[in-house]
Length: 582
Image (cartoon, rainbow, N blue to C red; front, side, top):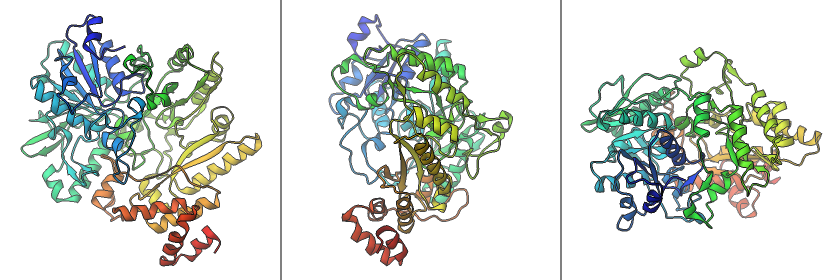
């Protein structure tokens, strides 16, 4: 296990660690936790590494001092979740728990944890380089709308004294940085590593974005910036260096690495993780670990391009898949766990059924700038063959010690085939299959970059047909979002009526939460679609959002009166009839 204390460093014979990583999560040495991956990758590069999980930022800052200074640099991240999303609901109410903390307790990480940790470390060790990374820093590369302060903020490098930002999945940037440091290069001279950003005087900039100060005055400038950033982020092999001025300095962003090869991804997941929380948590439950303890990641990336989702911005649009050998080896390792009862909780990824799916002609993919391969229609170059994935499912469930291997990650129903769905329902669903149509309204779905609702209706019919044919009792659980840009109360009322007709009582629902670096957030802030320049209605007040959310629960007696009153005001007696037969 990677050391987390002075005593553990001494036991490991480490006088001064090469790198010390700070994280807002409890430390779990499992490849579903980013800090564990980076720690193991750095260790494999021959470095001594220590981790400081959930340091106390309120006291005398002893947690930031206890391991001293690293020989090379500090690494800082807020954890697996953005700290603000972790802390607050869509209505900005403080959450009472934190799944990434022992016993699920709240209050063990600060708001904007990445900035807070970085500020403290630089105040104590001003001459030690600090690299920030992870989801919180990564999605704040440039000027971005902050929902919690309801304003535009500059890129995070202009808000903190960090020396470098690693964005996206950070293994390859960290590996290159470390190799160059080991070759004698000075940290301050390492400015050209792919998938990194810095604040300072640029060596070169190929595309200069509108300055932060211009974006503060012009929402159209902010919208235009977004289109450039998203298009560059979705390229297979980008080459352009982006720059944005903030005051008298510039944030410079180097292009990202191409997608990881199967061999590279196998290397990362084959590292010697213990797959356990650090012993310091003995006897304490970490809810997030319970959920992923016996899960296996098959691939990374997502080409769905949903407008409200950050996955493609963080993991990339193109799929990187592990080999069958690597996946089966991990399952066998799980089977050796003394507490394993035979049930794999998830064989998945960002979208469970994208394993080994990509372009038939890779050269066409390398020229493509589309943010999604599925909308407005499925790309004709996309090879949708599910046979490799079905082969993985079959071989996993045939392994000795595996009683059942569930697919807990969401699937893309617009990619699903009859054979795939049948296999899933017969062998890999634990009673409920969750999918995400998100809405029923055609215009809202178009803004979301989701397929028409008729696609979900066809999938539901297929689901019911298989259920009936094989005498199964599986449930289909759809996810929906309210208050997304473009959505009105009337659209929500229509959603209620249409899902009622399909015999759904909705339970997996949420209000739209604007998060940095998504199309939906840019529309929410600017009021326009950055690509079409058309104005888009957005529910911005707490009252308007709650009014939309109410329609999810039309079946609750306490909501009936308010819904009928509102539908009368909208002159939609047809929807009153559809919902209440009156």
